[in-house]
Image (cartoon, rainbow, N blue to C red; front, side, top):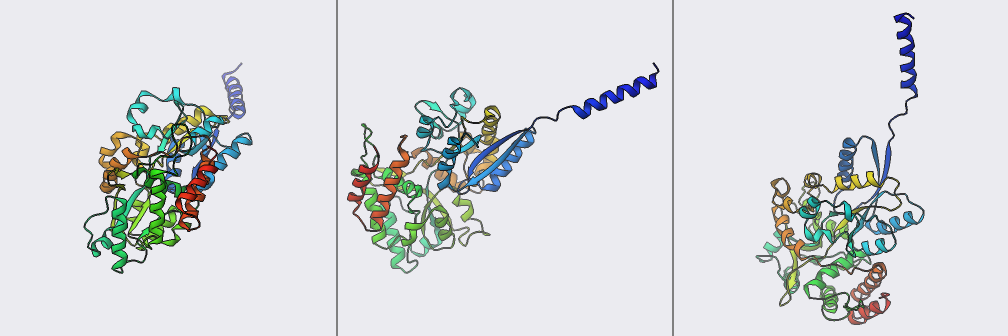
Length: 413
């Protein structure tokens, strides 16, 4: 057989093999994220692009929903047999998700580097009954933001250290005619109101549940917290529209210069200091939420969130690799302007702290004081009962005591 014929045959065979060889299989992951607060949608897409470049055989399709739809979207998808491989979940959901087998237990996949490098308080975000159901991703609490210019005009030299001082300073600002409603909150009948309530409850030394697992928020610090909220509404220092506001509404009001004080998450700091977005850029102060004299120096709610792999995922290994990438220190450090990292050493990294030194300083104190909402598989039921109680009280439809006692009776605990 001639060399030419052999070459022709070989070329034909190789061409046929090349033509029939299967293309590299591509794994597609479906991930569910939140469309508000913390990392922006653009940040999440940029992070994900970085992952896909590092893993060219994996494609990640993203879906964004408002926080209020995140829980139900996850549960409904699970009930229908899947749909998501990776989901974002709130610190209040691991108990329910563990009981209903929604997330994969990743305890054995947490490396020593992860255990030692992540801030201890962050791990509570993904833990239930001694197991870890993912990785913490958003480490967050609510801070007290204040307008430096308005405080200066009012003759106030420094922000309040207690909730009582906050009310007094707000009254001074109102009395001097600087603002009609110096404080703005997110008190809509939603989880946002529970986060504000938890922050104040923690300052007053309150608790949600007793050792027997039954509600005690209707007594002591829990009752005082709601009484404080109602008092600021009745005295006219709270923006009355707060009863309908969520966090983005709070940000809008504060950035328009229509509030001297606002309680909100980390993400508001850099957005409110962006001259393209905000009328108060350069005037934004931030400190940990106040304490209560004789009980606490600061207050904080654990508003952190984690990333986990669903038990219905057909690609659990690839999904876990995506979670590890998204929560890694280099990625978190790169996108640290709207959400601060979970990694302890990041808080001393100039690349993270530059331009937001005040926020990082507040975070070092506040993140160590984060107070948890109740850990119970029936949290959703409890939360709804408390949301209704807060609304009834701030709308003066019920006394704080009566409202909370009714919530305790309707909590399912």
